Amino acid sequence: MEICDSLSIGAAIENMILTATEHGLGTLWIANTCFAYNELVDFIKTDNQLTGIVAVGFANEAPAKRPRKPFTDIVEYR
Image (tube, rainbow, N blue to C red; front, side, top):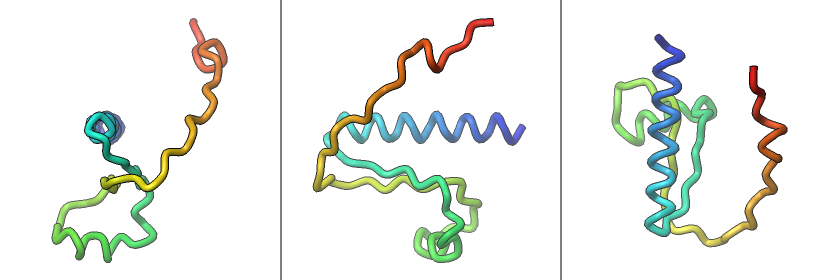
């Protein structure tokens, strides 16, 4: 069940990031919240468990796209 929850959370975050990008916003997906977990929980005032954070705002840079691997290098048919 936890794996399904994680996959659903990842898909939801990806959709949030894509939508923000469509609106001209920059995003940063912070998957590891352990570095400041207590501070983050206090800041957003929640008792719920954090699984990730998405920072959203106006980007001050537009880095070049990273090179993509060829499709045949990442897909395997069985």
